[in-house]
View 1 (cartoon, one colour):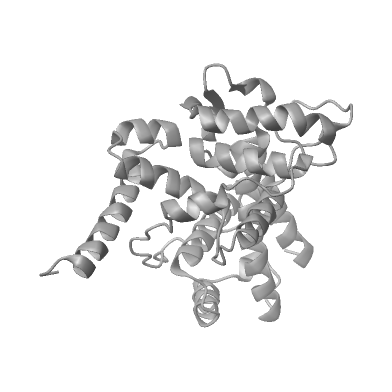
View 2 (cartoon, rainbow, N blue to C red):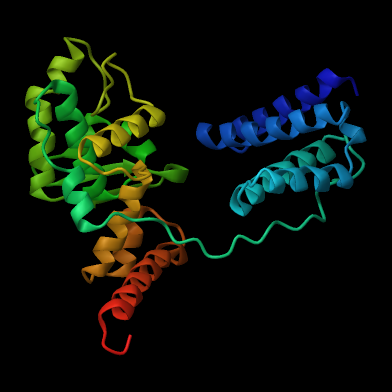
Length: 300
């Protein structure tokens, strides 16, 4: 196989994920990123042909990743991408065997998500000092993100028509095109209404777009752009911590369960297919309780 055909095999696999398996663009991009990292490693090893890749090359690659202090979780994702790629190449007759078939994924252990305290949430949701159109938009987005626990990809793509302020409900089309309805408090609705009255028209400047929260160019905002916004807002509020949009989703779930919310209701609002995923948040709350107990209980 010519060296260019190795890249062509990767591109064919990515098209297969997009067209036949209908995976989301972000998922396909993750596959691309992981595979390109592996191809760069092979290039340094003077391996340029698909049929030359062996189990030893894969073992050397993951040892290299370990030396680079890549997390077990990321290495597990990379291995899954490689196994899927080689499996596709095998099915296409490009390989006689899958060199990644018998490699075990690294043990990741139980990962508890980082959540914000109620005080940190209050700081993050404090009204902006300057009521510019963009500040009103960002403030409304943060409120709605914490109020509903939706994913940032769902937030930036939410149509205006899916946000019902009169009933206080948000209609979300999540993973696998599954629809769910999430209620939100009147206080969050007021922030969104304020933005719709005084922010959105000034941002659009007569342009038309279906999304609820357009960028200053009048189009849907990217996930990375909102990531930058939330970090900037956090720093302005004195929250010098590693913060991400997903942290508000984690906080939403943890705070609801800590307040006595039903686990299955939280599962439905988050859009989790498996309730065991939602149960992770009960462990977050348990770990906090243990910390408080050990700190303040006389016999802790």
